Image (cartoon, rainbow, N blue to C red; front, side, top):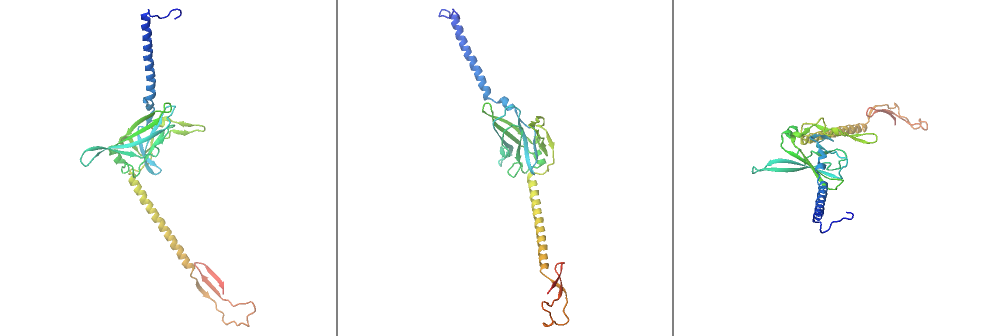
Length: 287
């Protein structure tokens, strides 16, 4: 103020100072509240987490699997994340009332970090609700698969959640996702344009239950053939041993006159020749 200042005689100046202080407090409150609200909410952060539009069913290590993709398209990635999937289906009880059935889907990789897009895999085994569905039954069924991804942001440390769902018309049978990760000499390259792309591959139209039954039948038939081959090999081996134990003397030459002990020179012995047939082998021995 220099040599001038507000005194008790300047009522208008006192009022302006009070209004300025109150207004500055209000502005500071709004700014700080907006900053805290932006850090606490994750609307824009959740928009960067993408789920593939289609889920696919295909063979993976000779097992039917349901697969979909999750990707994070921001430079800073989350600390950790967990995926959960549930199958929702309307079911009619014995009294005729419609109830909602919830079935958890067991995932092979439920704990993930989205450094690169990840393909989440659910193996369709005997515990899966999709175990008895073939291609036609899957297309005609009425259910919804709800996918939830819970993760922690690296900047704020707060927990966020993203959700998506798949209905039967959004599940492609006999497809697989294209590769998005390419290995270079000194780095890895992620092709985000292939995130949604799929390729049609061979997959049986039967259900996972029917495929497992066919594999079990084939394994039993294979074991039966192996046992029969081992049995025939043992029979051949035993027959060879029995033949080797029998010697057939085909010819025998006897001396016309008996040889007396005085007529034999020292060191000479009488002998006879015998041709012995032993399993296709002729043995000539001196006795």
